[in-house]
Image (cartoon, rainbow, N blue to C red):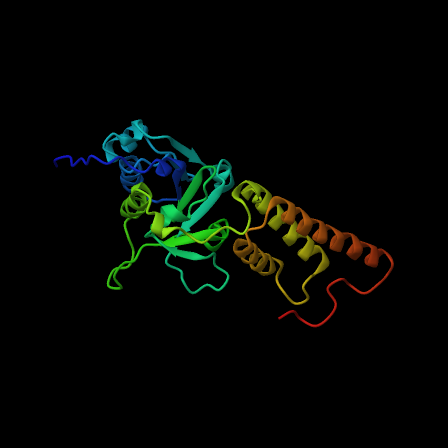
Length: 266
């Protein structure tokens, strides 16, 4: 096959974006995803997997691209996402009321945070991203496809998103304004720590009454996705939950009613 080249270079912002593949099944798909990421100038490709892959296979199925792009393998998603300031998932699940805000692929580059590296998550070929993987995302993006065959090959999906990230910026297609200056926004790592704190307090105090702590935390997560709090605001919220925990423990020591006693939450 002949190589096709163009004069325009990928947008510089594309190098801040990294593809993260969550438990891909086929080394051939990993190879085509590596090539697509390299084609569009992404900063790297990272694979979350329990399997070991032969570097020669990766080189072969990526047409040599595995040697020209940052490539890493991780056993754990938290480890893979540690360096990133923003995480965006790819999904066609548009009906989950607790899902992160969903954006079209067109104009994606305009919606990325302006500071720090960005991870774009791609799910398993058969099942896509799991609910827990999607919960790590502050937003999701979808690629419009025909209902006759809506699913994309993993490499094709990376190529489509890579193309959108590599296109030159369109000043007329700016995303929604942030509610806090970017430099003041709560870091992603701090947000994940806060969500863990909320779930632990909810579970310990059985609060809200009648609600699953994990479900309650998902609702808090989506609320803060929309609010986009600053680090100071997040610290204030964390303090409120810490105080709830302290008061709940005091009530228990004093023989008061259980912290979660009352009518079920809506």
